[in-house]
Image (cartoon, rainbow, N blue to C red; front, side):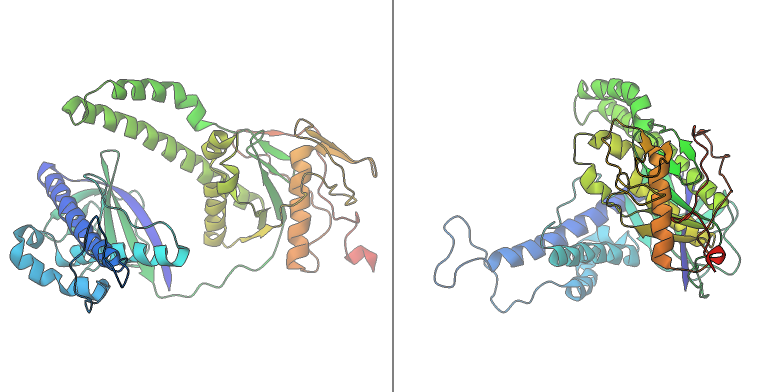
Length: 419
């Protein structure tokens, strides 16, 4: 079963937008009420068996079962008799809100931390429509239950053979989107190692460097727009909270963040597609970027978005039938890709020079070449080592490194020539 998510921009009118806002508030109230039941049940079990709490006491029967997902879903029809607002929302949308709470509760139980929190006004920003009798998407419209027809910008058509399974309507920075989940009953085999291999090294000095000698400068989207964002946030801090001017300025700040996010993601997708055009196998380092973002260079790490870039490269490789793998990142900058000798250097040294074999190239290119060698050794496919002459010189915003070294195997000759 092949499952994809396509996101489109939708344009509801004033009435439809107001209805969506009201539904989100109703779902938020149901979410908070269900969470309150869970917290009350947990607090009632904290009291010692021989004495009660002095501050507060929860009067809950001892034989009352935990309010699990099934019980709370079964209580929704009875709740609709007492609260008329619940009838306005489609029943399946309301059920998905309760299911979302219990997915968070299960995740909390697995990790041991991250207890679900109450959602404040405006924090629930999406509605999930999980089932449709017929295809709700046309070339210009999206049909939702109890809402009607909403204009949609179908910038790319839904592929033939796919059926629409569910639609999530979400709001980002005062703009509405529809995330459409489509499925096709096909089995796609995983890509096997084949063709030209490239290693990719990412960093702050250069956004990425490939084993073919291509260097891409870091775009620094947040840093370039930081001065304008700072001005908008200063204006927001001077507004009176909950006022109309405060809400207008808050949306302006949110749109700026949304623009930075979209620009960064567009750059990542373009680089990922260009890497797939360059090689048939892509190898990257297996690093924990979330931990690295907590250091002194955390803002620059988050601005580059290395974790998102690696996920996008993996997705694009899967979609285009390329092979993707992650290799061990230990010592990739302290080892020579030609002779495997240790060539220690600090961060300010940007040129790799090996005292053992005399190999000289850019520091990041040497790391990418070593990543490529480790990737080829990881898959252990005969005939993939050897001399490669293809160079990716068409990456946008790239420049060619000073040393146009050709990526070679560790021994400097192919395996066939050793026979």
